[in-house]
Image (cartoon, rainbow, N blue to C red):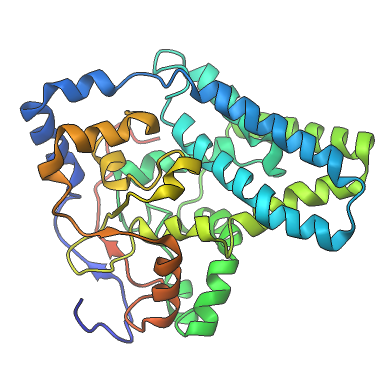
Length: 323
């Protein structure tokens, strides 16, 4: 990796994102990949089991001392809630019930959102489509940090704080970078979530609500699974803007590590992404990849060439059907 210590700006490029052309080439060479673009028949059952597991944990949290509540929120609830946000990511691509049933997918994402404690699913879908359509797009892709983040969080201690505060930046960044009007689904998401939180509080008291919120804030912050936030698109090697990770944490994160494969084929459910690499290994095996999300976090904090500015950015034209 080249010396880019003290980056003061993003890596600006003047080419289109690579995934569109890759997709065309791969489908022409391997038309069998199209057969993988089908709903995941097990996703709804897996997500339902996770939601019920967190409800059981809420019931058990009533009798926990506060120190053990926060420990369980980090060690168990953080893994489950982070995984649920990745299930919501998968569902946002209509992989639970198929593209012909978008309403079912949206409402199921709201159901998956319940243990997260805060409304998330509808807003995520609204912005995530831009992340795929305008990868690295200036003012469009809200996955890219702001200049404020790049300039402020530039030392190891500050980058560590930035990682811990990821839930807040992911929530606030869209409002600053690319604000959009609230949708009806977002309002429904908020009302359903408020009703669920109020019901849990009425039934079991404050501790279960705190447990759920702590699970989300801790699990999406400085947590081993959160390494995927950095691993996916931060430029660890010049010229490469998307990276995959093929390690065991994919088992509990809906294969989000298969990120090159996901951006090449967003409509393929996470359960089938390993098959994309198996069908077309020559498109993936030679690319740089990560082997440990914990190491990704370590390198991000202590390598001066890495930080919020270590992202590829481009100027994109709005698509005609952009909403």
